[in-house]
Amino acid sequence: MHTFAKGLAGLTALGAAGLAYSVAEAHRYTLRRITVPVGGAPSVKVLHLSDLHLTPRHRGRVAWVQSLAALKPDLVVVTGDFLAHQQAVPVVMDALDPLLDVPGLFVLGSNDYFAPTPVQPWKYLRGPSTMDEDRPELPWGDLIKGLTAAGWHDLSNMRSTLEVAGQEWDVRGVDDPHIERDRYELVAGEFDAGAALRLGVAHAPYLRILDAMTNDGADLILAGHTHGGQLCVPGIGALVTNCDLDTSRAKGLSRHPAEDAAGAFMHVSAGLGTSPYAPVRFACPPEATLLTLTGAA
Image: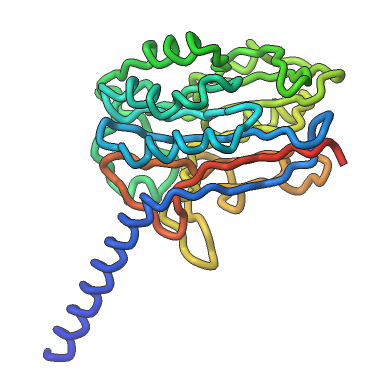
């Protein structure tokens, strides 16, 4: 019995240490730098942000995002889930303020539309989460108004032509596929073959959207939503993606389709935040990514 008690105490201490580490890691903001051989000219810098999940309490996260303006990107792309609180729109605008003079693109995620609720981790691990219809609505309209008034482009089920660093880009995006707000048919069709870059944007990297954008000729697709798995196993990686994307591509740069060396490049951001009800990360620190597009190889 004494041995059992010692073992139980050891497991309890190990669990407590793991939890403490996971809480601390959720605040270990990390900048990743990746070179991508796409685009019509070298050294175009794209700052990819995702899943900020901001509340009025996140002053450290706000300050860190503000500091990214020192990177002097040519374009900022935010792939959704800005909000996690009814009063978060001014917090988001404050965080992004130093970047709003830079051209920007964005789409929304499910957590921009609906307030977070307590989560049951075992359900998350079973597969893609479902939307509780009783969740209060967030002020996503005010978010769109603020960002578009600053000159950023809302790509939720929209397409556009954008000048970036003197180049003409053909860009399109969809509203959040995770809650089936995507309407790709509204933006479908071949990308402009003459554009310096053909860019697709989505919050959640569901295969139906990745397939459609790739088939239409996308060079690069940006997404978020997965949190990189959020709770990962060292040496193994993500256990879930919260969508139908395979776990081997839960974060970082890959190709789509995965086995096609000539497919579109895809970058999935592990994001900067978490649900306020699950403020932990393990072996998956919060991140922003600076993508340097070097021109087609």
